[in-house]
Length: 94
Image (tube, rainbow, N blue to C red; front, top):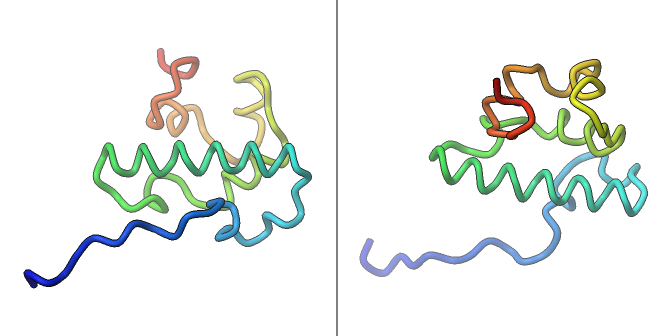
């Protein structure tokens, strides 16, 4: 065990690991990448695997729809109001 060393994850875009990301336009890929980076940081903060914070499918849906208002976010199936608040988004806290 003393010889085991941390190896950083492969550099490169996180969206390459998401099935269906190829359907996104460049702006959608940028949105998805930002969401994935947020999910990674949140997973580290709460010490949970990223998929337990939020799955790939909801993130992909958000990247496709690119909602601008909370109302748009709630009408989709990606995130419920509770999930938005759980993720710590300031506009979703009450």
